[in-house]
Amino acid sequence: MLENNKRDPTLSTLIRVAQALQIPVSLLFFLASEQEDLGPIDEKTAGKLMQSIHASLAKPTNATAQSGEQHG
Image 1 (tube, rainbow, N blue to C red):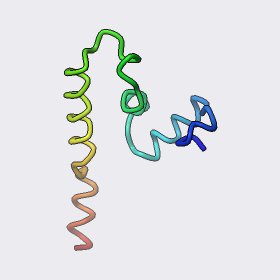
Image 2: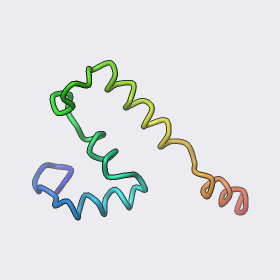
Image 3: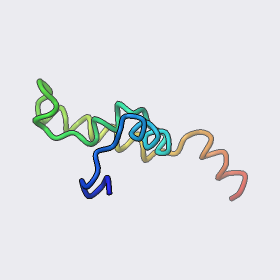
Image 4: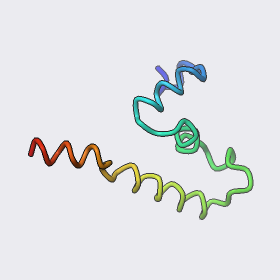
């Protein structure tokens, strides 16, 4: 229901979502922002930030990499 804009989540719900995704809640807010929500951040800078965030989230963490090595 959150994804379909049928419910407005509470802050505690957003914090739990961020924890489940293992990202800071501030990144969750940034990733969900529209350009007009970003104030003085221009579109080019916002795009670069988005790319950087997506790239860093796509990299396995040390724990994930070690876990993969042990089971692989």
